[in-house]
Image (cartoon, rainbow, N blue to C red; front, side, top):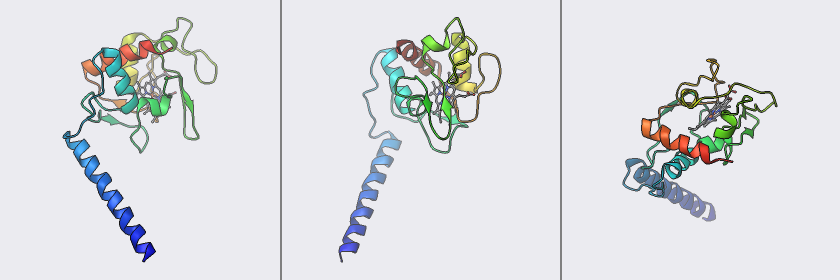
Length: 157
Ligand code: HEC
C-alpha cells in the first residue's frame, strides 16, 4: 500500500512537471525576467541558453544534454574543469587580451576581435581559424542575441 502511494505520488509529480514543461515550451508561460538592457538580456542568454522570450536558442554539436554557457563556462565565464571537458575563460577581457587569451593550461592563445568571438560561438572556429573541440556547441544566434551576449561578456570581471 505504502509503495503504491509513493508510486502514485511520483507519477503525479512527473505529470505536473510535464505539464509545466509543455506550457513553458509552448510559450504560454514564459519567464519575462530577461531584462531590458542589452547586458541584462545577454546575461539571460548566457545563463539559460534561451532567448529573452524563453525559447531555446537552437544549436548543433556540443554535449548530449542541453546546457547554457554558464553551465559549461561557469557563472562568471571564468572557465570550468569537469571530468568531461575543460572550458576556457570567455570573459571579453580575457578573449581580447592583447597578450593573447589565457588558456586553461596557462598558455597564451590568440587575441580575439569581436567578429571572431561571434564566429567561435556560432561556427565553432577559433580566432586562428581552427575548429574548437566538440563540447562547444555551435549556436544559431540572431544579430540581436549576439549583440546582447557581447554586451554581457563585456561586463564580466
Ligand atoms: C557543453 C559545454 C559548452 C557550452 C554549453 C558552451 N561552451 Fe563554449 N566552449 C566549451 C569548450 C569545452 C570550449 C573549448 C574548446 C576548445 O578548446 O577547442 C569552448 C570554447 C568557447 C569559446 C572559444 C574560446 C577559445 O578557447 O578559443 C568561446 C568564445 C565560447 N566557448 C563561448 C561560449 C558561449 C558564449 C556559450 C553560450 C552561448 C558557450 N560557449 C557554451 C564548452 C561549452
